[in-house]
Image 1 (cartoon, rainbow, N blue to C red):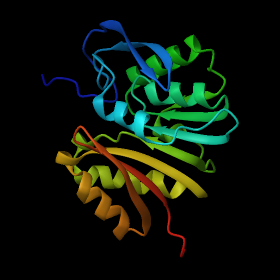
Image 2 (cartoon, rainbow, N blue to C red):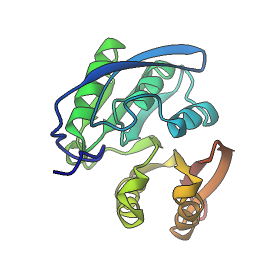
Image 3 (tube, helix red, strand yellow):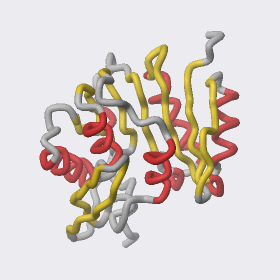
Image 4 (cartoon, one colour):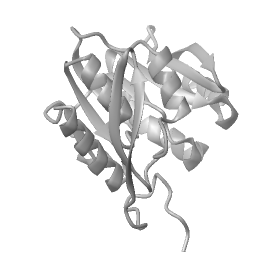
Length: 205
């Protein structure tokens, strides 16, 4: 039997729970994690770079955000704390990840604003003012492109997407692919082998 991957919809391995701690923007977080979920042993280095180098929303920001491939919810947690007026959709194919995100949202008293969902559970009419993602590069380039082709068009006209990609796993080629698909892309940071990309709609559209 093959081992579960973090993008497995229903992890089969017996649940082994733990907690991790990390700090972002001067705030400390303690989140529940478990095996069968992406980077359960620590805050993933790419996610850490994204949260450190991207422009986090401020307290007065309203709107609807997407945490795409939320895992156990570290990005959703930070967005909910930094922008208490925003609604965050936390989306993941992994049922265990969604359960952990719901638990962590409750612990942060943000259950009403972090809406945890499987991809097909997000209503078709929802558009996002911000999209945040450390996308699952290990699913393969073709599947990654399909994923982004599904969700990036749901970015609001003046919205911004923040992506972090390991440069050794296609960070620069993804940058080029996005540009070729008519997105404006800025590389705002490159740290510890990761590219942080700011993606917006082409102003000529």
